[in-house]
Length: 141
Image (cartoon, rainbow, N blue to C red; front, side, top):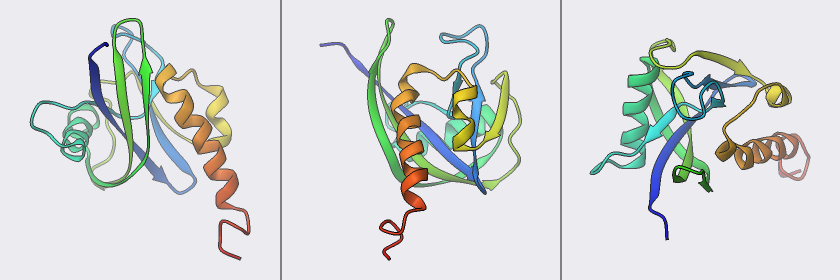
């Protein structure tokens, strides 16, 4: 059984748009798009790791909310357990400290970006989440 690496990421909304970041070219899965985040260090909770990663990568402070979803994905070089948290920017404006680029996109724009494979299941859930958020049954009507 391969060792599983714990990874956290942030689903940060700004109105109807959410934040995505493009990985640096020199890293594994270079130039693919992802949610901001990273590996959980020993002794950290997922929320603590997410706050640290957002500060290190984008120079922002986030407030961490509930888990949106989590997935396990096996890459050729590692297997990750990715937990995506709802999060909000509490302080700062995102700056490119590590990533190649960042964008605020709508759910309808997902298809215009090449994402890391571990994010594909999350992107499908976001499409469904968006569809159901507008239906009468999901609004409790």
